[in-house]
Image (cartoon, rainbow over all chains, first blue to last red):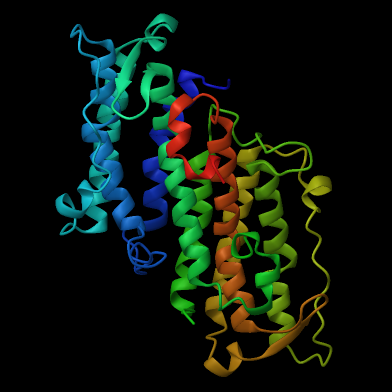
Length: 174
Length: 174
């Protein structure tokens, strides 16, 4: 196990800035490219991350830590961004993502979580029993997993343009 | 084909800032984690990117555009960073990467490349004939392909910590 709360918090603070370094105030439109119908662009992903800040990570942590005996999480809507954020600009989404993240990190800090807090459990509607430690670990890598997806989309966008260099590009040969 | 020179230049300008947003002045040590013996950490990758700025992309473009009849590139040493940069701090590497990139982008701008320039060819020691367009396309996605690698390494670092959420994490199930 590699979880360390202070390292998780630091990466959670940094990832909105990583997304902005790629896309904020950009002239190119690579936030809109995807891997085909039904797949997500960076624009879709940032909407999804905003929805997670509002309805997933911290609200679920509050269920785990709260006094209510019912520890079952609300199901998370992975497609909410299609309705909620489709008319916003990418810059608006990036700003909102960073603002919400900063608020949520402040809340997380204010809890001063102990080891026994991190062992507390909630009930995921599909996965069953999960600990607060597992929830925060998943939150930590969730932005990064989507950064993996965004980087793959960009590499694929130039798959033909690189010509014979395709041979060296593992992502395009798997 | 999707290549557009102005979009390539913009992403080449941005990626050093993406790497710094992840690792510059960081308290965590996730720039040193990798996928096991013989695999690369973010620290190794930034050394490799510096070496590319110095010896690969722009020097090869100069061979393609120059007057010398010999258009064969020098082989690129993918492992040079192991000797050259292993004693530097990550912050030093990140700063040098950004400085070199900015210098190289200035040079690229100064060439005012035409379509016929982009069609000019060089000889890659392994791949054979390649165009300047293919070289710049490959340069464009090279940082991003390594960002894909770095994000994969970070996700894997918490593979056990996320517990049952592994089910939803495509990267950990492939």
